[in-house]
Length: 267
Ligand SMILES: [Mg+2]
Image (cartoon, rainbow, N blue to C red; front, side, top):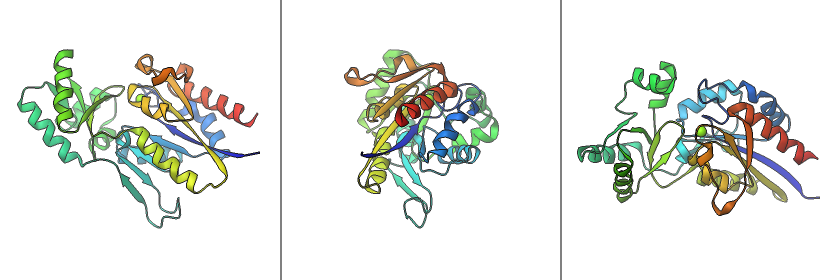
């Protein structure tokens, strides 16, 4: 029998974390089961490095993680025989994104970006406390923004960004101005690392998400899971591919689906 090994890749907001309260406790039974089965849980989010670091500590997670929609993969010291923490980047620096956004604002495109928001304003837009909002503003490569115009102007804005090799990706709350990288590319990079180190083992990826910015990650995963949420109806996989869909929203749905997959996998 071929040995199989699971690796979980998960979005955070609205998926492992409740959309409103950012709670993850309802997912604890499944997280504990994954921990016992030594299944890595890779946090793969639009969140920044410092936000994800804080959450990893809270979760007791020691696996690699993916920041800012796939901008970078962070591999902890010693994880893959790497002597120091390794950061693999797939993006141009944030300064480049901000310069392009500033030029587009001069042309009259109506939006408000994280950079312009005060900490208090960001806290109220997201429901984060101020300490968390400071971590959200500490970005490496992508810029979330609120769109203030109509759909026609939005389409024009997307075209203007594309000229500068930027795209606009829709998350649960914000649009993210970013280069042409995504959560899937970073996931595939890490899967390659696991496969190289597991000869003769079938390494199987599970990806969980709730928004269109998770679509590519789910499409590239062996087992895609859509978690019910505010945008999950518009998360449709290409090629008519079916995903497991949770009945419950956020971490409670995450818990049910992961326990289900683990039961199927061992049975
Ligand atoms: Mg999400």
